[in-house]
Length: 138
Image (spheres, one colour):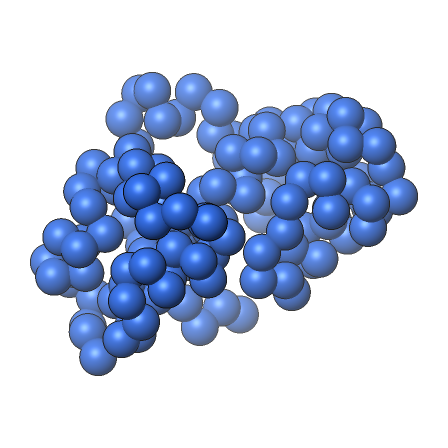
């Protein structure tokens, strides 16, 4: 069970084109054990690249990408970005870390890249999100 609050997942048509229509829990078929292992690995790690994950799963990068897309209905790179941005949104509302520190903590080397990705996902800047979030602040 996650201690993180549910963060609204409103999406524009452009943002949903590659996201799975169903959650993993709603799928009737069991997940491939390699994809399940990858999801567990990602849940336990702070930051991970597709290449690092492929090495951990003993798959080629392309092989992992194909398998993940087949099983989850989404590109693994999109999944990783979504997870990073969700973690960032959580940290923005529950910590006193600076936006730059949060960007680094979720795997962005440059603050500007993080801000661009965050604005693309949430349609607002990280600063605005922090200041106007409905989630209880520190």
